[in-house]
Image 1 (cartoon, rainbow, N blue to C red):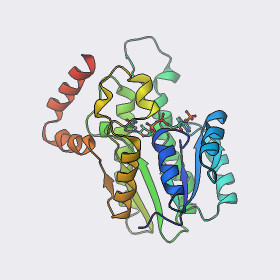
Image 2: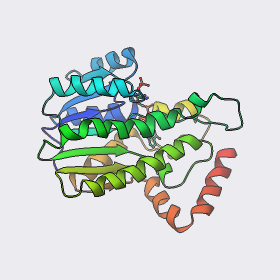
Image 3: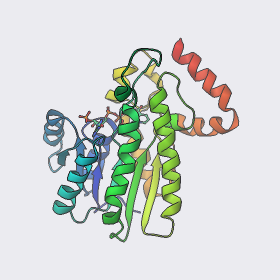
Image 4: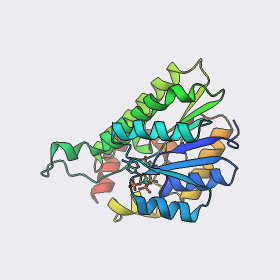
Length: 251
Ligand SMILES: NC(=O)c1ccc[n+]([C@@H]2O[C@H](COP(=O)([O-])OP(=O)(O)OC[C@H]3O[C@@H](n4cnc5c(N)ncnc54)[C@H](OP(=O)(O)O)[C@@H]3O)[C@@H](O)[C@H]2O)c1
């Protein structure tokens, strides 16, 4: 599948992986539409990348997804690619006082968001002869990270859902790809995990090149760098790897 001449919707495309993917897809002659919650970030992204289309939309809000679907499909009826990328990741201490609404924010945004986006956009995508859905999970989908507990649960959920989706759509025209990034140099990593050793994080340009090459060469599971290691180690020695990662995070 060539990633050129397509119409691509990327949730959370105003920063980090989503923004870099938007830039590399624009350079390959795709129509690219991004979303985000912050008007200033949207304007900044459009300023940096003329030709980029953007809508303000919160993937954690079902009504906003309905509105986004109406707006995007009206303006871009040739939409054939959905990248479920928007996400947050928090360093959460579960014993701290926290409201019931707040504690599940990663579930709302990182897990319910992509599931609802697929539910809403799938009928439109199925009209395209060669549709593509990319689900952005994480290396942490293979081995949970104890300092990001709700994020770990959400990303394991994204992975489980993606496998089911791919199987259910196997005989249709929609290809389903899971991209599991390793630690990648983006604002998400710099914010909550700034004190951790960032030396092993992958440059975002490299990650996105892996993603595009992986899709174009027919991979359904793209696990660059450390994500590949975690996917294997998570099967072979899950407790050992989990405990080592927990110790490293606590150090
Ligand atoms: N960076 C890593 O090391 C890493 C590793 C594995 C997986 N991932 C995954 O990769 C994806 C992108 O992460 P990133 O590192 O590029 O993060 P980032 O730089 O923080 O960018 C996140 C993007 O998502 C948007 N976003 C957040 N919440 C949203 C919501 N409720 N509705 C719509 N847009 C929303 C943000 O814009 P607004 O805040 O303005 O809405 C921003 O455009 C996430 O799913 C993340 O879990 C990242």
